[in-house]
Image (tube, rainbow, N blue to C red):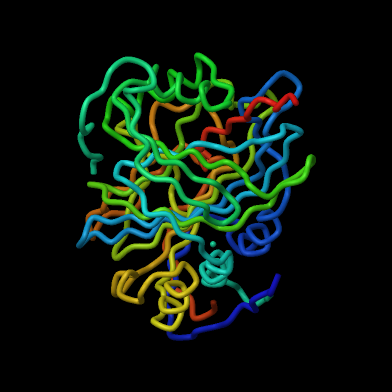
Length: 348
């Protein structure tokens, strides 16, 4: 993997939150690898295990389009395995470069010692399998992706079982939240893998939505007993945003915020296979970090525009953080709230 070198831009203003962000860049690059944190749903003795998650959310408020980029390493002894990702609108799927994570990570501050709602259910629908629409299928970044739409979580559950996936009551309960809202569910099955580990490419999901979001709500069976891993979200937008879990209050305050110079914005767009105009003008990146993911939650994470004069409210951060903004001239993979699933072994 090509390693990008950090670069300095003395003209770039940086807003910094928290006492330990001086080490964030090193931590982010080190944990983008293969640390296994949470277990997915699978046959007894054949778990799907995810590592720490780093996501990018790019919000185009003018067009109500979110670009969601994720990268994950995971392993399983199952013959086939994957995960399911919910989106408010029908997603466009495309492979992207994992260098996008480094582009945003390199904007972190340094101190001299040197990350819609869906449509209606078309045409007929009966019970069980007939109530599920297969919207699209595509091979992307080492996955076979199938986008589903249904108003019936039980029908989704039946579809999974009919197609060799192992589903549970917890999975069906998880799906109820999204089918009731008219969301789409995209199942990603790993194509190229070994028996012990799989490292797939980076996937971009672009979709219409009324407000930007990051998956966070997971089935109870996906929450590890001994604690979770780390979730990092780079939120790219024009202006400051708060990150809330549904309507229940603040998820995390940003550890740091930095403006994105035009050269970096253009590079980011190229890395995720989008035209430069897809990155909003005058964008900035806010870096959110949660060191206890997954955990029980009432909803997903939604980003809400902050009034210009407001200071981020203190939230349930994993450690005390300061809300002081500093200006410096110095210059890091669910969940991701995704539902992991494992397919049954094929018996010859």
